[in-house]
Image 1 (cartoon, rainbow, N blue to C red):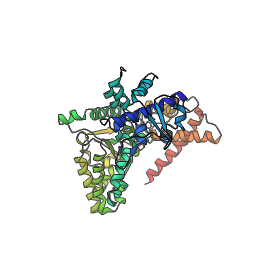
Image 2: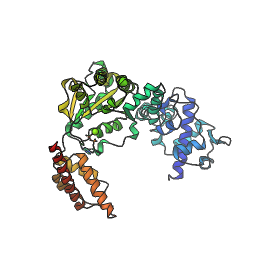
Image 3: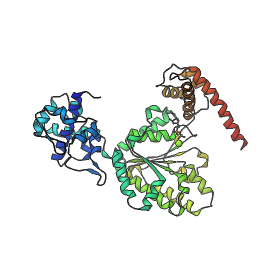
Image 4: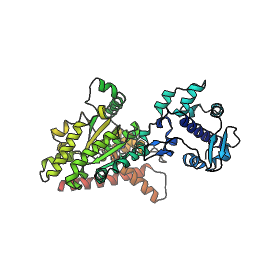
Length: 427
Ligand SMILES: Nc1ncnc2c1ncn2[C@@H]1O[C@H](COP(=O)(O)OP(=O)(O)O)[C@@H](O)[C@H]1O
Ligand SMILES: [Mg+2]
């Protein structure tokens, strides 16, 4: 639990923020720290209504501090309204002066509403514009994303069908992160370029450079394509829309192409966001077979939608992924402005992957040796090897791990790997 002094500061920060937000019309949702904003989010109207009211329940929900009033009742500038258990400020100025003397500068520098107030009324060294820029905007909150989706779903059954084609997650709910992945230099460079392109979107529009923001990740299964795309969502704070092309056929076919159009429309409305299209080779497969006219129409719709969307204009970063580049035809290739290879990791990368995935596990390991033993393995294979080793140790009630556990798991894995390969040969 937090110490009581910090709890008092939490409560007073909240009361001050609410008071300032209520008083100054020029402040908007992006002046509120996400924690506070989320609690007062009106998902129907997609905004935070004024006035923000501070009840003991609200303090408990936001900071898990029950009975807030007990902690702050000796302060001279707060009053308690028994009815509704509300906390109010008597004099804003007095409260603000007291707060500023409480070693609260780092709080103010993370709270645009406070920074706004102090930059006008105090000698504190705060830069409101900067604090607001650094505050996570409302578009990153899952509350914002899902209230927008609710609104769209409310637009009828068709909208609901469209939502079956696409899985949406908020950046704060994404578990993958770039620092847990081992990337090639080329991958790192491409990511860096995309980050810059998003940052300089206005400039790119000005010079009419639109050929950026459509990436195709190409490589065998388990080399990190999906993980990198998701990690980018977290890193850049962009909602993640994932389209599964195999879903395109499992839908009622007549509606599919319409729904694809709607997925892209949704991406434009959620902008900026990442639209991830997995199994991209599926496009080519359907063009080869001519069984279903409806599937072809859907695929053509997809290609046309890709042409019509842009990072610079629409704020949509599009990432395709494929395990089977040989299946792609030129019509599919030319829609992407950058192909990013996801090769099998070399020994140095495998060593680094082993280091990352064992970082939280008790024991010392010869990762160099493990890397040498796992030629041809993907990152995903290495995780499976670790999983086997950990489960085996747990079976013996051990939460530490030995080099031997890992080496055994590697050789069991190789046996299975050979089985799998011979299976392929028989097909
Ligand atoms: N280069 C890598 N570094 C670290 N982990 C990796 C790497 N490649 C794959 N993995 C791990 O393997 C798993 C599967 O990867 P995934 O992104 O689904 O591969 P793909 O989409 O290419 O099939 C994930 O848990 C991921 O963390
Ligand atoms: Mg994948």
